[in-house]
Figure 1 (cartoon, one colour):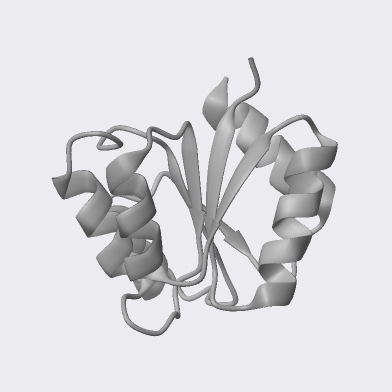
Figure 2 (cartoon, one colour; figure 1 turned 90 degrees about the horizontal axis):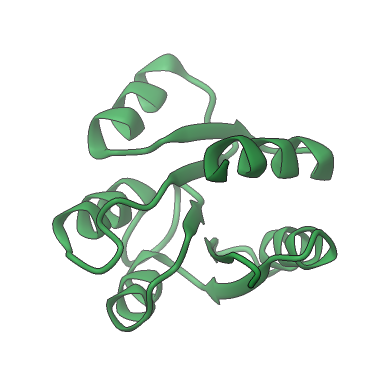
Length: 121
């Protein structure tokens, strides 16, 4: 059975690129348009991993991570930030909230898949 990964990003083009890359590599994908959309969908469904942007309307990536970690269903899933932010302070903030890893945009599809394989084992 293939792994189910959620991608949360307010950019439709980024969501499409991430989803396309994941599906080409045999993963199932659920898309969310922002943090609150992601939290709603995660409340109803168990996923294997979350890939989230940092800067999103309604609920940002940090808020989303905190929400997931405070929940029950997906509390222990790996969460990777996929963002244009590369400052150490932002990375520390993500890590403190519960992020597992960090990928800076723009990214190469093979880089994304390598991180996913490493995180999911």
